[in-house]
Image: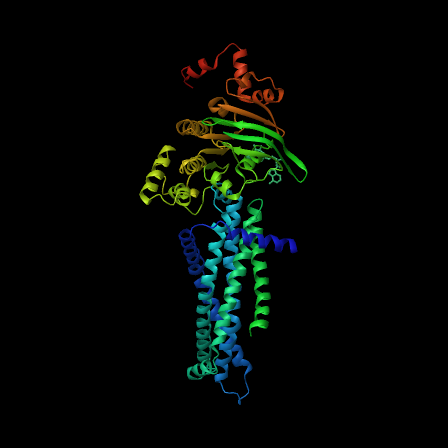
Length: 243
Length: 268
Ligand SMILES: Nc1ncnc2c1ncn2[C@@H]1O[C@H](COP(=O)(O)OP(=O)(O)OP(=O)(O)O)[C@@H](O)[C@H]1O
Ligand SMILES: [Mg+2]
């Protein structure tokens, strides 16, 4: 375990020495960001909208006390989605999507000697292949999380009004009640940390793949499970320290 | 000239290379010959620095490569072109982009037009002028090898390494690939190292041949000398080819291969 962690740190370090020129690096980062971001918009949107809707319906179901104003439903949807559901669930979904694609992509490059080809050319393959993926993820995860926040609140609105649990007026009132801007900042910090974890863990798994196609599949699976565990651990640690 | 001095390499206690000494000469096709599993690929990986030898050293034109400073190793690596056993083309790029890639990365001062011309020239040199827009998944194995060669020579490499350039190719295509490597070597005075277990290549392009057996160099010489070599393992290797034995049979029966080949085909 400690050995693996040590190797992981060395891997991180190898990425930062002898990097490519900024221009090349920047172009690669943008390419990766587009790849990670655009491809994930659809799945993140769907998940976020439904999470918001389900949260709203369930809170409405549980809040039967007539003394509590209905706008509380909107308030609670906002608190739950912004603080926890949008960043964490989106990141878990992204761990599945982005993590497996990073690990699978790098693993394939490893077993087909493409990484060796880069090394022979005198290019630092870790910095050329991995660094842009990490930076791309760090740029896109927060954007996707912002989208997820908006859509989950919107999903809650639709579910609440269409099911007749509360009026649109009441929902919006709840959404605007006692708003703490820091919560948004906290969620974005979380998303950056999750982006870093998912991309580095998956890259590590893929980059050190040995063997054949079977091992590439195994590396992808391992990348996703390890990323999700890391996300949940980090979620807890961040909540303890930053809230 | 590349000098390989006393290379040892073992995996988990299993020795694969046991003290290999050899020289690869400038401007020549240097062949490393040997059976499967004798450590040819391992030797090559040690030379280009993808693997670290346990003992021993390698120098490129007098500059120490093994255990030298990262900058110097990097400098040498930038002069190395390599053709991998499976081609190792970047599968997210087209054939032309693959060829352009080392130029983009290694010669930042080159203008876009110069790069395009160079890519065009290299692709033409390997006979693929019309395949520039294809993806690696859309071309055949032989074409992949040719793209691999084009990519390797694009930045004017000083050293060219080829790991089994004609494995998995039909005899006619592999001769073409061999000829290509041979011509390029002599045209540009490159130090070329070709790993092979194909006797066709040996007699075709072997300017300087090194015979590896069980991790040791047993013989070296050129293609004219190899048939007369007095090393039992090498003899075994050469004459184990069924084609050689078939030819022998023809001659024993009083025929000649030339005669059979030039005979007009009979109507069936
Ligand atoms: N990374 C590695 N880890 C452990 N053993 C290895 C490794 N690479 C090669 N070997 C072992 O070294 C020996 C030589 O392998 P090598 O690939 O050099 O053979 P080769 O001469 O290139 O054969 P072929 O002609 O089939 O390509 C083999 O027995 C192989 O099992
Ligand atoms: Mg081999």
